[in-house]
Length: 210
Image (tube, rainbow, N blue to C red):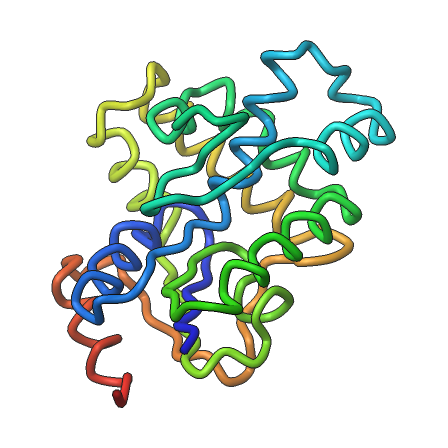
């Protein structure tokens, strides 16, 4: 079974997906962590981020694994490093590379061949798992999303800078050639702006029939 949760950054996708996976006792799969992991590797190994050919060659040969819901890069658990500002800044334009998305999508689909998952990301319901049994699209205003990110205390940016970065990222994600941010026709739309995480989870669990 695949439960796919889509939507822009800062809508609570990761938090909700983790809770749903726990409640259903299946694996939480964070697609964004793969792009962030690749970005971390590119920065560490000083690969030219403007050279698509080198990025693709690097990603194709990168040792990326997903164990116990943690991203493993070249044998190292890097989950705690994936939300640094510099990773957030570069991962969105890198994830817009069509061929790179194809590489990551193959890795994601392989993981789901042998296990049920709750997976979240910005084209999970439309491109990666269009045949998922359950699809949800979480949304919220940029103001609310920036406030949530700011309150997490993981960024050195001001509230206004975070809001501007989120809006810029939305623009990039909505205009990608492949995997653009959009609502799948058969996805359940949930505006989380005025909802608690528990309320969002309750709505989703209520739609899933085990």
